[in-house]
Image 1: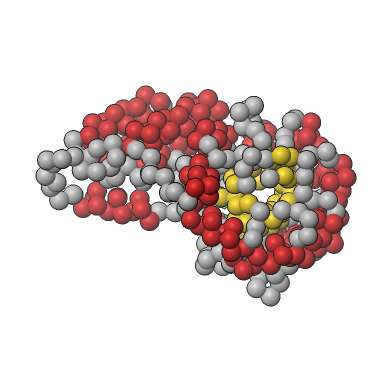
Image 2: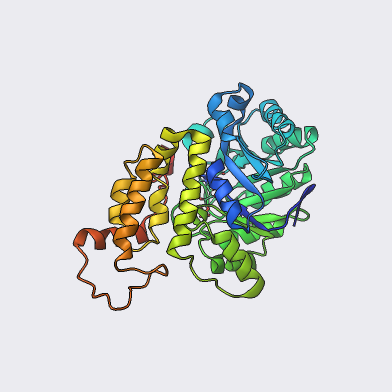
Length: 367
Ligand SMILES: Cc1cc2nc3c(=O)[nH]c(=O)nc-3n(C[C@H](O)[C@H](O)[C@H](O)COP(=O)(O)O)c2cc1C
């Protein structure tokens, strides 16, 4: 598919997840296949212009991490333009404008979801960026501020008129936060409103089948996946295969999950250093472990790691223990007589299946 001047080999995209979609995660996803354009966490345009070290870390990339879009937030046109020009100079493939963040701190300054309430102002900001850049400018929005203000279709039109190359639509309103189910009819209305540019659907896609439903129900040109990529890093490869052939690929074996988890940790250490990388990985490893089978033993140890050696210890102890009764495919070994699992393990297994990435909750006005 085409996104402005960018030719892409896939219509599946990685949605920005602040705190998760860092360079090590993106490289890991890319190695598994099916993903082309990935997006960074949201980056404050002003902080980037000030060369704030945290902002610079958020845009860190490698040749293998291409094509890459950086998502900017801010409400001052000149700052957004200059930050985007800096990114273009640094070789970034596209710039995405955050118009969906519901957090009060971002909305109060006129950025994030607040941009959906002032269409003219938002279009002026986007025009200012498009006029200055050669790389595509895209926008990521929600359906609107609330159910009475579903401005996404009008905003999409206004943005395409000023030269925005594509819009990504999360099918919820700001008032909805992350609650309820994604509104596919709402995304469809945006698809119908846009005349020339691709609309990419987003929200609750955690399986290849859900991606197909998003495409078929809304008519969108592509699908952007956020939390589903963290729950299952193979989702892009498996969805690509499913959309081409209709076949659902088998789940990766235990050894493959372990291989990819170790690779992910290596990259965390490479990018963030051993101590910080390991600390950050404490919240990542349990996501891999969700599909290991009972993994309480591993999870208890991995959430305290400070070094690669401690990680290896935790993994080796766990693999030895698991190997007594579970095969690589997750099935009980022939002849193994299972004793009832201790309650702590049963609870851990269930908790693993139902856990979700933390999202802000409570009344959205207080986020
Ligand atoms: C922890 C977390 C962080 C997020 N950070 C961003 C962000 O930085 N920029 C953005 O546009 N959306 C952000 N989102 C919204 C996601 O990109 C996406 O629109 C939303 O999660 C719905 O898609 P999904 O169900 O595939 O996750 C975030 C969502 C979560 C849960």
